[in-house]
Image (cartoon, rainbow, N blue to C red):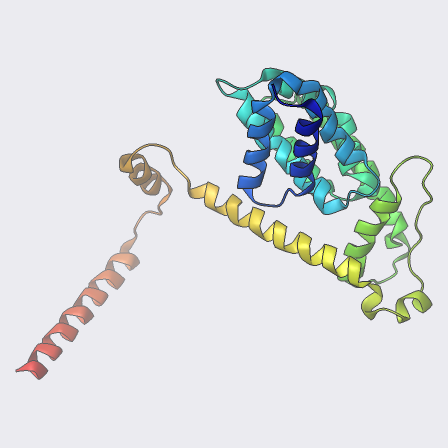
Length: 265
């Protein structure tokens, strides 16, 4: 039997180093499945990583996406249903940790919607979560001065989105205030190097996730016949113009062949 302390440390390390890669999330989910006898302990590691003050917003987002893979694997035959029940039980706590002060709201919406489509969350629970997310968005808008109509650079708002959520952890934490012009003057566009690194990392990870999402749209299961049926159903009907264009292109190709044969002789 594996040492419980070592298993917790290993799982915590996997969560801490999660990236946008689906492979990393699946590897972490399989590790939790392998040590299902410690399900409560490993689930508590997820909550601890989300609620820990030094966990950045990017890592919280990656853990949120991991939960969808976690549910997928454990809902299949051979999975551990208790993990899914724990996610359902603590979903409100998870959402509050990931979407602190309005950050990562889009991430939470996407994952919660996916869990709803898989039957993990009920429409009532999703409705309650959505209501809470809207409140967080409104509070973040006020924090960034949106209601006052103050123009801000998009990069600066992204940085505020990350740093505001970092400082907003816990009820007793001091709320950050928008940067003043004097404070911005010392930094390009008012964004520190640390903020820029976090923003660039998030952009790259979101790009990777969106690429996988586009790939999944075209994914089909089964043999070539199913792929052909999918293309046939989604393809547009040919009109008279398409037939005329096809005839013209065929004639051009024939002329091209005849021309080169004449040159060869």
